[in-house]
Image (cartoon, rainbow, N blue to C red; front, top):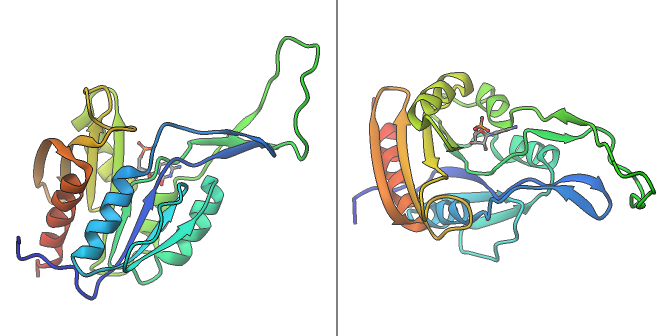
Length: 221
Ligand code: C5P
């Protein structure tokens, strides 16, 4: 027991990779399993929070966790805009596709004789950046970043550009860390200059460390 509590706090967690439709049966996706987000939601609930989990992967029921199932980045954006109204803590662990298909086909795309098929993409908005603009005073917003190089440089830059209070970064090239694994290694940076590193822990333990780090910011005057 670390003496930390999220009792009475409204917590919103996003999880999983978004699916951007190409046609009714195909999508552009990514390797996010939603495991770190699920762990964050469960641990926040155990610490006493009322949790809303906006996820692309159905996670099953868990006490004090309300699941909102979404698929595309657009759906995730809409759900999060609703769910984060009045939130005390928002943890954006989802892997949002940077691009979506410009004009998804309404019927299944047939194989044509042409050897090439071109699909135009357009940028998705940065969901987290938009949510931060509506954040209530005293609330804490956390972003996650998966990086393959210059982890800390990128984290510091994203801390600034996204306007979040905390960035959590993981080097996805590290063995056993990141996508589809049950363990993770992270660097946590806060905008007020605090830094913590956790290596090779279960995603539940990483969740506890991230929430412990965040809850210390609540306690500050
Ligand atoms: O810029 P990058 O994608 O690395 O930032 C990662 C963080 O930003 C994550 O918390 C992710 O959920 C969020 N994000 C977002 N909307 C996007 C892309 C990323 O909210 N379109």
